[in-house]
Figure 1 (cartoon, helix red, strand yellow):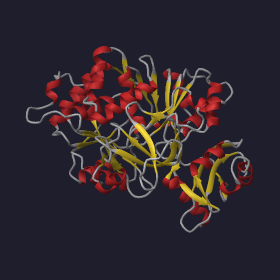
Figure 2 (tube, rainbow, N blue to C red):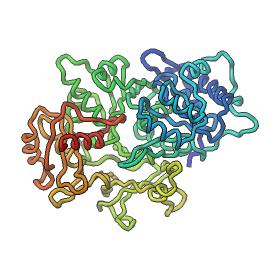
Figure 3 (cartoon, helix red, strand yellow):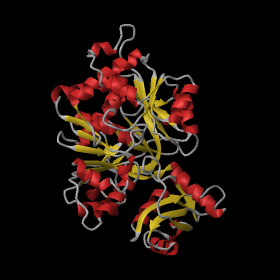
Length: 504
């Protein structure tokens, strides 16, 4: 297991490439030396504010060039950073505050600030952070740790990442320095970001996929371009061209939008060499279109969960040689399936996917019962994560995802995966986006929501050319846009509300 602390990733690159550009937001750009120095100054400022080892620091600030230094600074103090996306419903923010019990909240968001003050939690804003980061006072690395409070160990937690389930309030996954640094180096060994890369990240940093772009770029010595949420829409293509982007971490909705923008007459062509995907299955037709319009593009599909960061990664363009697969286990880890009794299954047998290795996170914050259900220590030192996802691992070690446990439902008496139906809908000519709402208890038949220049009847008729009749949803609804979560995934709760409104 790794004994490396998270800030060591930055310190090592800053020592080798001090004057190389590390991060920019389209306005400001900082070198690796500048990010490291700012993180040391901020660590001293946090200590002076009373932050100590094990404390939680809530971060809800603009995603700009100053953010990486702040997260590394929190890690230097031995505290735990919790990145929260705002604006958000007050009830959700109150839940995170009460659950994480932070020692300090860093935010410009009025609602979060007011909720924090009611709970007597100190609040500092972006101006305070910028002042500390740019202070002329020199701070030696040793000054970031006082004599009465030793620095962190690799087994100490470094971040909480809140992730939503199908029901209830979000739960936080606890990640230690060792788990994060192992995952970063294992992922980088497969993706191989380069020092001359520009990694264009428009994903929210509260989403682990977006957050880890900071650490992956650091290890590679690449330049990270942090985009604002608006860049995921109509400005995506022009932003990629302007930044000189070579790497785009994408979820399916982002890739679909990029393909749509590239298809416009006279659209410019960004210099992308690599597109990665996780979060949901990528429609093969979208990848075919992107490869046609961007001939130099390489694709690496991935499969993962917040609970282990990344479980499997395909080799470059491996989807062309192994269609339907989503990757092989990271180096130093393994993936296998188990049956309903938890017995390990041989290659090729469908079951629940289980992940094992040093990247499996420590568990859920203050959720011992849920941690016991999902994280088992039945085999040796490392816990094994029961993912709740179903699929199989073939004889060559490639993982084939079939759907989540809560993704499987019955249609006309037949077990169906919503993921399978969505993939089939994407194969229908004229469908630009698709999302399936499984049937609610007591109701018969799923609902397919699409963005398409077709009638609902046309969509279902053409879908029958892609699926067996018993798997075709009972109804179809055409929308101008699909509702998405903040992480760019189809928002099934919003689809359920839409379905309820139509029934009402």
